[in-house]
Image: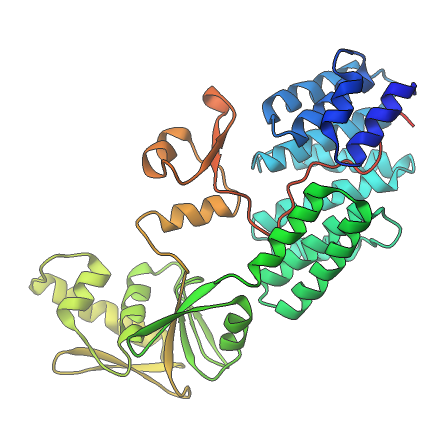
Length: 390
């Protein structure tokens, strides 16, 4: 490896993409192409980065399998940052196996981290935890330790395990500072803000207030009957009933929960459940059917009783009924939630629905839209070891 390639690789490892480009910007050999691709990715030019990394992978010879595997890992990370979750996972797994077979444990671990982060975005927490548990961060460099701790924190946040998340963020902060990479330190700082930002709203007795993630965790362990509008479930201390596939039933349950201990009129329930401006006899008949179904599903948690005006909810064991709602609820809140979790959407849909609320990247048919990156999910492009040959 020549001195310019070595210096550029060290600059990238230190989070200095401009320093790397100053050394290899005019070169078209395979190692330089690979380093240019990583540098462009760190600068946010993802389309150009992908093209350069692919050119590098093709330019490496048949005896440079490790270098090609590193290029595949780099391309996989670019796809991850682009929220292209359909990128072939088998290619990443094959690259990881190649790196492990040749003793490149650092980049193999980086490939594992990418796999786990993808699963985390897809909501497959059990699978993500299982893979992460088999990965020991102790022998890894500081940057990789920081990424590992951020993933642990991200899983813990989604599990509502705030103590575990805080401890992981402390480790991530220490590792990021040791690595001295500003972008990585910023990722840790953004992740820490999640624990101090409103995570949900509590609606009870006609009043509402914001809750931190720790307060949401405490609420889930309380003796209250919780109508959870974040996960579309109804729960108490001993039972959980999912209404995720029954939007009408959940709309009725939420209306009853918000009004508790008072009742809700039939006309209001019709408007909330069926979005009808005026209730007629057919709506009232359908409401009776849906309330009967809700009564059956919630029988272990609460009774749904008829009143002269409408219906009311009566918990069987809980002391109170509360509704847990998203921090922000608006016309396109569900779409925004998907974007924040990394799903990609077509420009034709999002340009009309979410103008001014999301960021775009790419051009033409490759353009994708997303909200600013979620704290707790690192998007810093860092191959921990120099990408070209040893």
